[in-house]
Amino acid sequence: MSSLVKLELSWSVSVKVVGSFMQRRMLRDFYPYEFVEDVFSIDYQRLYENGVRGIIFDVDNTLVPHGLNSTKAVDELFRKIHGLGFKTLLMSNNCEARILRFKANIDTLYIHRAGKPNPDSYWNALSMMGLKKEETVVVGDQIFTDILGANRAGIPNILVRYIGYRINEETGWNRKGEKLLLFFYSLRKKYQHRLGLG
Ligand SMILES: [Mg+2]
Figure (spheres, rainbow, N blue to C red):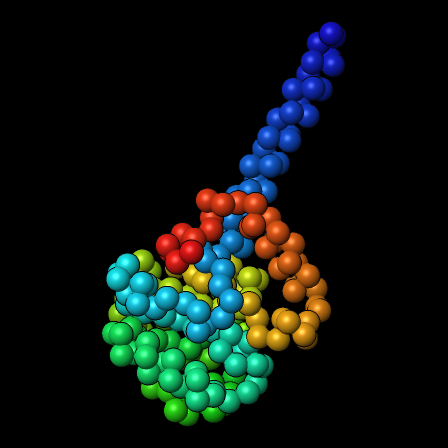
């Protein structure tokens, strides 16, 4: 084998190795710690036992369909969560009027126009709750905002299926991208059930 061929071979192997390493590193930011059906199927008691004391919730398509008011079931869920001893904070990219309308019957902190996935709002949320990132969990329906931002901020997180996925309400590029990422995620066992909920 000529030295030129050897050089080309080793170059192409190194590019592949570095490429796949970088891909894995980059994809890691999109992987949730847990992936569950909805906010009602999360074992909050278990989270509390594991030392979690604060939960940051996305609102639209996580707790209710986009733009809608809270429901009795969601109000009840917040009472239950607060009863267990958790602090809560709603974090939304939506405007303040929308969040205030949603939280009419829920006593919780909130951040509107959060600019997710910018991690600044997540760190702001931690200081509002007076908690460390290890004591907090982010719950949201979007990989490219809720989960990416939480991972960038170093806060454990739970992805819920977006409300309306069964009737395939949203078919935009971000949902298609999420589908692809969830496929890669399904192959990467070490990133799944990192909160011990599975
Ligand atoms: Mg959402």
